Image 1: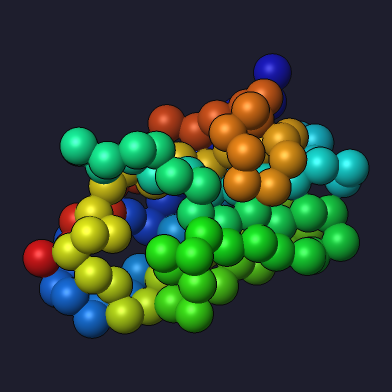
Image 2: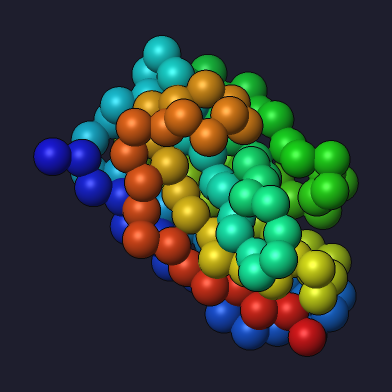
Length: 118
């Protein structure tokens, strides 16, 4: 059973930074991707960032230039560095594994970590 554990969420002021981490129990995305998605009240769910096994990345236009997704294959962990955060970045951020770029049809999901920007 594949498990994903996220950490790093919290509350920051606008302009601040957070780094989210996601560790997956099994390396499942050698041929697919890991991704971060977010849910916010009153907004559509959004794919934020994704990375494939070769380290190629894709980012949502809404956050491009402010986020960087990286991976540590030895630790089965991906890191989402978020800078210059805005109040509209507030939401629950979910890590997902075994999917395709920013499309939401991933097979495995974490429990989510809350990001609040005020």
